[in-house]
Amino acid sequence: MGKAESARLNQSLSGHLNTIHETLQLLDQTPASSLDKQSWADVVKTGDQVSKQATIVGMLWSGEKPEAKAVEENMAMYFNTLQGLLLLSHGSMVGAGPTLSSAINASIKQVVDCSFKLMMETVSSYGSRNKDLKLVVPQLVGAVWEACDALKKTPASNITAIGRAMTQVAVSVKDVIREMKELKPGSSDQTEAASDDDTRLNGSDNLSDELGNDLSPEEMKVAQSAIGVVSETVVVIKELIRTVTGLLRQEKPKDNGNFVDSLEKLLKLCQEIGLQIDELGASLYPPQEFPAMKASLEKISSIIDEVRSEVETLTSSSESLFQACNDLKSSMKQMEVALDCCSASEIESQMQNVSLS
Image 1 (tube, rainbow, N blue to C red):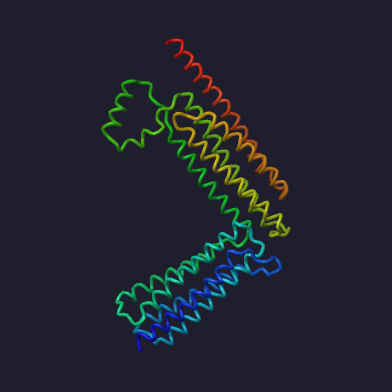
Image 2: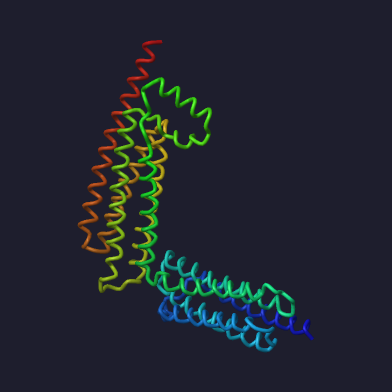
């Protein structure tokens, strides 16, 4: 009798899992614009219902082994609620751009994954003498709670999703500044240099501390000017985030195609700036790559021009952003001067070596 009940439960579970898998594919498809857009608040409410169903599962397995019929009925209710969550989520994606869609997908799929683990564990353990089940189930229920609670933090609009993605770029750029500030000038004292060599030979733990510590005075000037450029870049990104999120207060339609495309383009430009800043930071380590740094500065300048052009199509309230862009360009010109000076110094040094030889 126990084996028959287990087989029936597993068959029922398999059917529910297949249904959810099929519905889950909807999230990878762009919903038709003719569909009624569902409120994300309704998605969150349904997520709360999934949490409650998970709690019931936990209670069901907290005592003696439940009846197979009770498990089957509970399973049907759980997956019906989960199915409703998926359908509402798909409806909430009407007018969503790639960034918002990706955020919704990630949150919903986390709920689904945790739900699958919970139901598969309870059903597969039915009829077995798994003493750890009473410990495992509460943990799995807790994972479902956390996944459902995370829905409340999922962005509900394209503007919010884009703003958060830009914030991630700003955090990454700040990390580059921190790494740049760790660069130090090399010592001209030969005795100290020899001592440093002994340290490197005798203590591998200090290897990481020596990285980048042999910059010439000219190279240090380049590094300092680069820090100025990256610091101004952070300001530009912050102003861009402020400009984008400020669009939430405007009364114009927020989710028409052109509007969303502009937001996505701004995010892409912001991410491209972040990549160039990474390249710039990597080029500062000795031997410094002057051509690569100049190329990065040129690309950043071009991207900034595109940002300004795109923002002008969205809003007229962008004076602070444009000022930040101007300040960044000024910093880049200062760095170009430092690069030219350093390049000239390097050429002069090479010529002296040739003369001496």
